[in-house]
Image 1 (cartoon, rainbow, N blue to C red):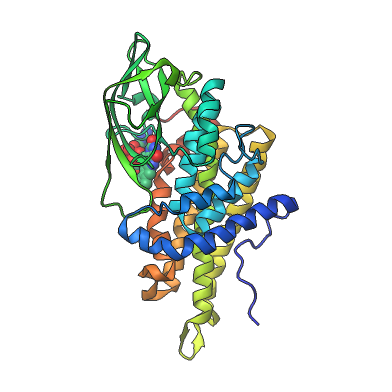
Image 2 (cartoon, protein in one colour):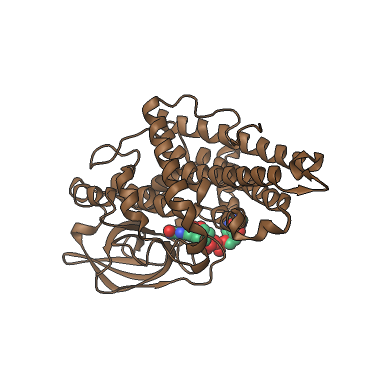
Length: 391
Ligand code: FAD
């Protein structure tokens, strides 16, 4: 009998309570039964499986860590574990969930007024309203902190928004889009809740992606888009507020890199135990084992790192540089793991049906979004040296 395939070699989940473990296993079963059978097809056709939304609702996990508004109020460790479980099967579905539960609900939870939270969060928690988060622009990605060109201008009863936002996940079907814009009167970045039927709001699907093809990314155009005062995020008044949301979600992306790596490793290990060459399973060859062990050692280092990261979040001591270091390290190691997973599968490694090719492609987007390796390195570099090397 061969040993069980399990990428959690050090049992980093050992501290989970039985109740939390049950939630983890519920999400694992959902991903295996409902998501896995259909993702390759939807990925190939660049479409989103809308039928999953109802099933997501039944899981009752959205808004993982938030207190109130129908949210589960779980520890950050659970948020990480759930991101890992999702990305272990499909990083696009994990991204959809991350945009809904983290970026868009998180902006409202962290920066909204009580009335805004009560209006939007319960509906978003149940997926009755889908959210998106618009920070990046066609000409401004890494330099968003100082360089946003989308503008907001205070007028009687509200604000006028102008500009474009690129790469916005869920944007093609989102009901609520958080838009970050620079105030022309004082240069500060402000956040807005933009509704999809708002006049002056238009979205176009970005086609031709080679990664996260299930995620529907949009190019948003705001043309004299009037937003009422009611929909100006009350406490989003500088880029520091945007950064608070990003710190939380970046930790989640590090966990997603762990999940994606774990899925690729486990699928590759299974394949090498079954695939025979020279009359023997290829897993019995020393050089294949060398690859597998190198993958597992990186994966184990990543898991222990993000476990501590979440503990720090739960302890309330997490800083930007902590989340950035984990994002840098885990996404770099992820690239190595998916590449080796593909390699040990030979030619079959490039076929979607073997569940590694999609991981190789998707890893490229996770490597770059929510701050590239360079930008997150500069955040850590600034923290450890005391010198900012951004410009
Ligand atoms: P650029 O900023 O143009 O960077 C290009 C290269 O230059 C990178 O390697 C970068 O690291 C490097 N670079 C830039 N500045 C420096 C510097 N000072 N020193 C050294 N190197 C530097 N954004 C949203 O707002 N909402 C979303 O929902 C969203 N979803 C996304 C989904 C996908 C699939 C993708 C690919 C992106 C998404 N993004 C989203 C945007 C994402 O966050 C940006 O792509 C990312 O921040 C990088 O910006 P950029 O692509 O403009 O690259």
